[in-house]
Length: 239
Length: 239
DNA sequence: GATGATTTGTACGTATGTATA
DNA sequence: ATATACATACGTACAAATCAT
Image 1 (cartoon, rainbow over the protein chains, first blue to last red):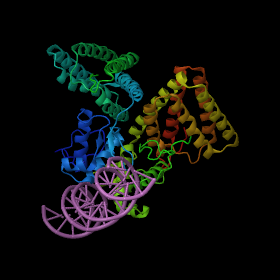
Image 2: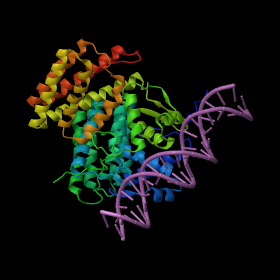
Image 3: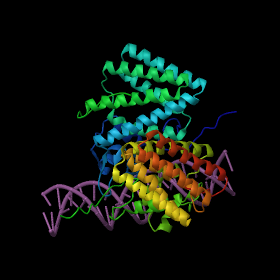
Image 4: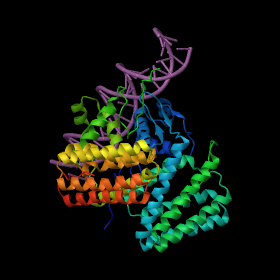
């Protein structure tokens, strides 16, 4: 019995993993643009000229416009009729509000995860955490980042609430340009790890309130770190 | 001194109020389709034929496709490459998860509102609530619905967090097709009002926890009401 | 403030992938 | 399984709005 090839998966804006089907041009362009924005290659405020970008990507304006529309829905760009889309540049106040919501969403994830993660999910989270310890020892910020994402994603998934995962990931991506971690102080790295440790313990204990509280303060700490950098063009912190 | 005409407002997917500028065809079509889905004129699972709808709306397929893409981003329709978009039909489980998140989002709004609503905002909320009492006396379900929306919206706004308002409204809209209130039992109407009353008191007292708790159970009550109706093709409850 | 240049919005035809006989 | 029918994906041309001078 062979598993279905599962072609033509889904076209959701949030999950782009898996599914090796041929992507539409719009999807390809959307992914590239989203990555460029999240990675900071396109700075907030920068206008996106349709003709120019379409040409540089080797596609017509039609799929490019669809991609831009998706990015607008994700909040990565802002569009106004008859005007060029621009990379979103939220006000400091709006950014603070988003961080606040992010903290609450992640706290809710952690709380639910503490209540309902399966044994294998818990083990997986522990494994990721141990990997982070390893990376910390070797002081390797770039690898820390990717595993850090996995740590948080594992907790999201542990909430067993697909919609919560969806909006939490969406919020995280939207905040990405403002917590980029190109260069990371070792101090923050170690602190982040310790905070993760407290979160992990709370979740493994099944202590919902503690899980929520430790996660919330973890995220808000990140916001504080960002605030310190406010004004710099490339603020850089990793959750 | 005359105020600016404010042309070319914004193209955000969430706020469509105000702004009397000439809309693009894509915007017009998007609004119409979104309303039809939210109001249940287009049932979950129904396919959206581009050619057919474009013709019926008197536009070409180009703006229609952009509208559909926006609806997909809002979660109102689901799209897969080379296949017709269909009106979203979430599984009962997914629906439950969304209600759960909705309860938490509204609870957070209520909590923040209790902490930071201004005096005039509180007075406005009271006025809306009194209006609901009036409508209840006259037993007028249809008017109850619109004022009920205002009651909740006023609390969202009272959170003073634009991003929270955005995702809460988006979630609310996404759930709209599944809590439509065409015909409302008077029993539910009166119960809803009593719950509102408890929420209002908690907010006016500035009691964050109580505001959150009363709001959360208010929303979850609605979900329960929905569950009772599950299986019917047009479940109908009003928050 | 008017006019030309530039850019976005829309229509439509063709290519491509999907579903069905 | 192959072919046929059909709906969507994309490219191109033109209209309309914005902006730059």
